[in-house]
Image (cartoon, rainbow, N blue to C red; front, side):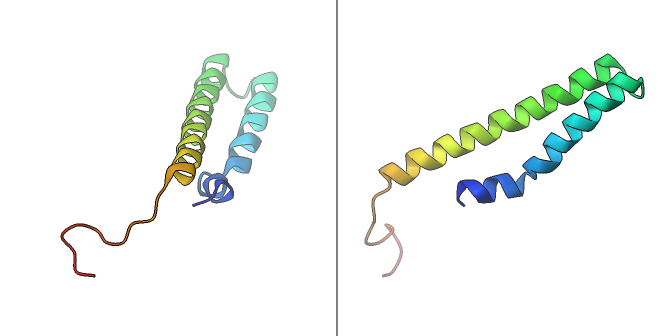
Length: 75
């Protein structure tokens, strides 16, 4: 899974669009400040998780070594 797949898997554009809509809804009084804050915190956690996934993927890609055979399995 490359980084573009990660963004697609979590539908990053929809998250950003949702946050933009939340700001509009907050300004018009459709949602409360508490609701907007909770939604923003959830988005923050999702983006933090995505960042960790990308970092782990880069680390593993740079350090991965080919193996001839997995122990205990027939070739």
